[in-house]
Amino acid sequence: MVSLLSSLNMTANTLSINEQAIGVVSHNVSNMNTEGYSKQKVNLATRNIGGAIGNNVTAQIRANGGVMIANVMRYTDSYLNNYYRDQLSTQNKLDQQLDTLKDLATILDDLESEGLDSALSEFYEALNNLNEYPASSTARTNFIETAKTLTSVLNSKSIELDELTTKALGDGINQESLENSKIYVQYEALNDKLTELADINRALQVTQTGTLEANNLLDKRDTILNEISQFVDISVDEKDNGTVNVSIGTTEVIKGSKVVGQLNIQTAKSYCESQNPPITYPDDWDGENAVISIINPQENNKVVVSNANSMITEGTLGGLLHSATAGNGETNAGTVRESLDTLAQTIADIFNELNTREGAYCIDPNDTGKLIDSADDNLLFVGADGTGTGITAGNIKLNDALLTEDGIWNISCAYFDDPANVDLNAVGNSQNVVAMLGTRDSKQDALNGMSLESFYTSLVGKVASAGSSIQTLYDTQTSVVDSVLTKIKNTSGVDLNEELVDLVKYQTAYSAAAQVFNTCNSCLDVLMTLGG
Image 1 (cartoon, rainbow, N blue to C red):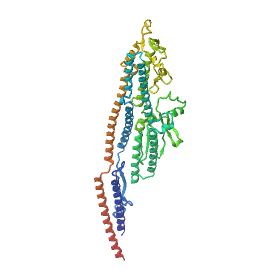
Image 2 (cartoon, helix red, strand yellow):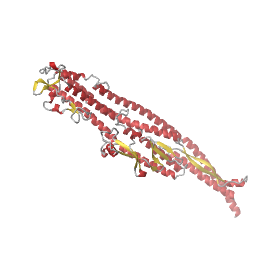
Image 3 (cartoon, one colour):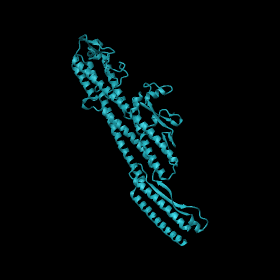
Image 4 (tube, rainbow, N blue to C red):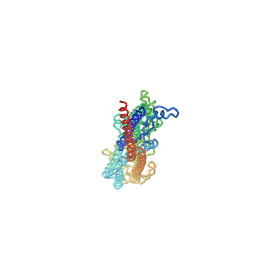
């Protein structure tokens, strides 16, 4: 009687266990197309109620409790997952760099003869015309107009670079500008993901490992880790209970169920003012427009890392942060701006020096049949302060003196290299203009031994070449990411053939257990009848 009741209990348990196993198969099949899902498999073990004593067979039989679920195994590969996250982070950085280079190529694009290349060409053509007609007011006016166009194009390129940088990082000064930038959106999203991960860790701490619930949490954990790695490169330290500690660089940001390193972002100006001693912005600042710090919300937002920009080199944040920084060996908005500023200053230096040099003469506006000595302050191009220094692509402009009624005569056309042989009546002398024309092909030390036009052409080519290189790297990186993801799916993905085999196995065991249950039940009915 006892054996029959034990058998009934055993088979009832067997029915329940195989039903649960079929449930796991059903769960796998249901999630075969779910992104980030890892297949699961029931591992069965013998269930013992109590230990048998010696060789007593009866006691051994009574000790057997049938079958139990030892655990629900989750198919995963931690090494592949970590490697995938590293590659994903690099891919997102390259993607951001590629977007920046495409924008730069658009800014430098000289379509429809409206770009800097065309402006330089027209400027030199106007000089050539002035060489032929040095006393012509029309030729002089035309030259001034082409010079205005040249400065206007440089100003426009600078504004477009400002807009590109502001869109990515803010303008470095205004909080509102920062909050409307790409990096602000990314920083907020990353902080949200860190909070989500801490919540998953908290749930894992109170969930039994090797269960369906724990495995589903682990899938969510890995999905969030993948999402975080798209923003920034991370290091992951997994614990036995499935929780993870996460670090950015060497700084821990997630420890168990707590966010111990939340990101904070501020404008460059705000950051400089907060330093002790304060940094003068922008004169003594050569960093990015936005500064990311790491604070600990568990310790009243204590600053852990004041400036974490140098730690963030991968992911979307890494690609954005350094998209406008000159001098980092990359072709980006910062290096393009630096090159355009150098070009603007060189243009000013060349033509200001020639227009004011000793031996250069202008036509007297009060007597256009006479020449007068060119003054030392007779500059053609000036910057924001009205001098020939500190000139950038953004502030270069024509000297206001050229735009007055008699300003056209301030262009020094004549040149005499011998002070003893100056002819003040030689208004047709255009030797100074000839010298200006000669700069079209002259190599400038400030431009790495290139002429004005070839320097700009080289800059355009450099951006195009960098875009092509990054595109190649991005395509290669995408292939690597896809390849690793395929390996992960081969390890973790649901295989319908395997699920079908398991389904038949558990279904057969369920049917057999049902048969045993019915047999035991029939035997009990007979015994109960006999006993009655």
